[in-house]
Image (cartoon, rainbow, N blue to C red; front, top):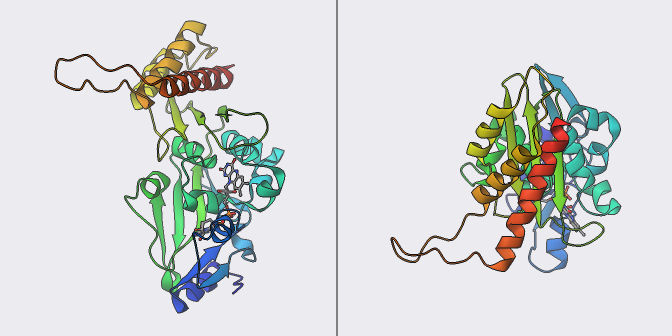
Length: 286
Ligand SMILES: Cc1cc2nc3c(=O)[nH]c(=O)nc-3n(C[C@H](O)[C@H](O)[C@H](O)COP(=O)(O)OP(=O)(O)OC[C@H]3O[C@@H](n4cnc5c(N)ncnc54)[C@H](O)[C@@H]3O)c2cc1C
């Protein structure tokens, strides 16, 4: 089935409850090829033009779920939402970026999904199409935490993100050269109007983590009306604060006892997160 509107896609999914939507197919077909998934029918979203671009709405952008990573990586999109463009450019090799979409990345909700920490830092919201023309909104963080899930026959139409007109960064470590899944990733978003720093760490947990105390602490040190620069020591302390919040020391076995040492792999991951967070904030403030 190849619907040309969101409502047609919802109707097709309602008509065949075992059908599954497919956008670029990079995640879904990998599951089918590996024998993990056997969808009874597929509803292709690739011909729905209303979800392939973006539009502006009261200081926000409404991004089509069908935007490919390749499209989001281009300079015009990068000028709009730099961290999301950087995340899209980091998402796999070119053939995957040409087919893989924003909506597929969010709905797959893989911990290493490169757009996810960016959407978490931006506090993005999904606009979901349901039966009989219904539309409802789900914060991306609620979907990723399984607080609010897609209902049968619902399709993600758009992703609503604020346009902050300020520097943003996304950095990813893969543990290898060339494209690869994230070992850790960090998105940093400056919000000068609210004088806030928003940061999310990807790939180290089932969903992106927000180190809220570290965000508040560093925002209080920034001279928002001046040069916005920070001393190297403050940037390093921010990196450590973020990393400790996301990869804490193990709890002691008994109350009052000594905490066991962090396993070497977790220690390495913590150092990687600290470096990404320090560099990400440093570049955003530079
Ligand atoms: C070799 C390889 C490397 C990869 N590397 C990376 C990487 O580095 N970083 C990264 O983030 N990802 C990576 N991926 C994963 C994948 O490319 C992305 O997650 C991509 O964004 C998925 O989008 P898609 O359109 O292909 O989704 P699909 O495969 O079409 O769909 C994925 C899931 O989302 C559902 N879905 C899709 N669109 C919608 C919608 N609009 N509404 C409701 N449900 C929907 C589908 O039913 C399915 O369950 C890689 C994949 C491969 C095969």
